[in-house]
Length: 280
Image 1: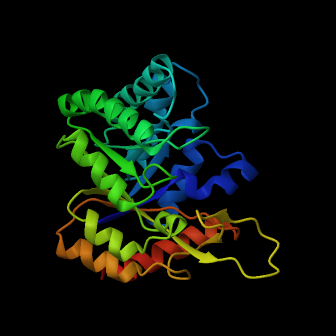
Image 2 (image 1 turned 60 degrees about the vertical axis):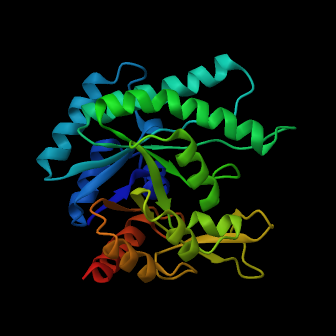
């Protein structure tokens, strides 16, 4: 298994220091990573990204890294066909960018409930959209990796159900170790359900907010506030998941995603060291 870091893991530093893709890539090299996970909303060149993609790929190779995954920020839970077609187009475009970046993983979302929509409405649109995208993914041999995120695919059984309904060998799970806590599911149980579908891993941890803390955390479905931590300082049994991945002979990426309030550069470096220890 190889280790990368998600660009989102350095979101606070990127904002504070105005980092470009190139700055992020150089940081990843400094902390001895194998790869970088890039996000669609950090491009600066608008619709025509070809020149910027070339620059990024050259920088990745110059630093002895690879792109572990490319993340698309989509939402299929839209009420009109036109809106949902735009979300399909985002992922199809993401597949093209992933190919140009020489990665085989496109992280995708499903969507979230709003208004009077039901789970049944949302799931139907998600499956329909992913089926359309899966055709291109199969042609290009690129995996669409569904992250457990939000209300419509936050639980492992929801992710499993959607993967089975889409029924493509190129649609699997981005297993986010921390996000299950936001829907009050034990990550170990989620792993046992999804272990055969995992094609990409987000290595993340949360702790419960202490009373009196002024920090604004992520609010769970039951109103519990969770604060991002360096992996190992929170509630997730990361050793269980790493050992389980070894037992499954998982050969993919473990990508760190830190969402806490400490200095992101230091926190991610510490996360890399801890993950390397777990992998020994």
